[in-house]
Image 1 (cartoon, rainbow, N blue to C red):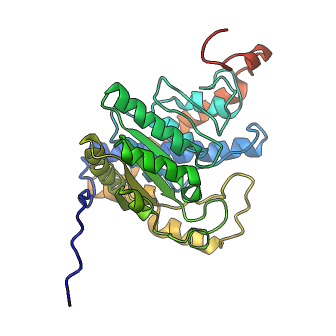
Image 2: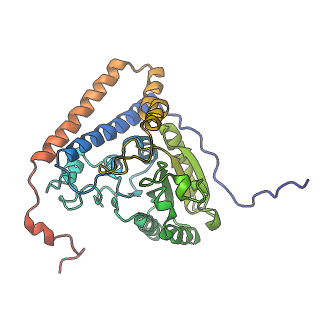
Image 3: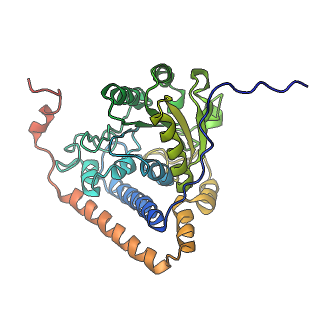
Length: 339
């Protein structure tokens, strides 16, 4: 039998788990725990009626954003969909500013006008949570174009979900990004269910890392529940893109523990399924075991937990008591310039 033809396209190397120092592991643990406790508190405030509209929590997916964004430099930009609170915290935006935005207060990062789904901070190179499914992929491609045009050495990390991966504008963006060799890392946060339909019921090709093949964009599938695997994949992807080889796709296999949004009872999956993932693959518990090997004690972790809870409670108290925006704010930030 003839040998199959050897692929003639260059591909990135298979990523290896990141070899983190004890201090780096502790940082990853703190960041993941901060996101989880922040999101739990946001869920409580939503239940109390202090957060209006939609609210999409990131609980279970923390390793993806922590692993990827820990590899970025201050030249790089981040854009995502509406499950965006964790990504913002990792961009260096204080918990108070994010929580106050959730409760629609003047002190919020977008002056209380963005809320949960539409926060934004050019200063922190975070270009928004976006409510239109898949819209951030085209905008992220534009950010990649901006980095290339300016020659600033930056890369855009553009996140989207398994549901958005079936949107037409995603493929228009892929085509343009590969033609122009734009510095974009397309991150598919595959949490298995989009809004409420499992990926294998809604996607003819459910191996989403292959979605760029017809555009010659390489893809890598990553364990999105392991922060070191995520960081290792980020290192490989950044090396590829920074070398001028064009975009790359990372499919992060992850899982959200809560419903799609706070209004979703999640009846499309069993409690046993969710509990099984929590028991076997929880990203924070996995990191905790690695820290134990490094000699970090339960007492050490308790101190970290207490400090994070203090920060989150402080952010919630601030968000409950800060004043709402003045009515005149309705007329600001409509246009970039002053007219």
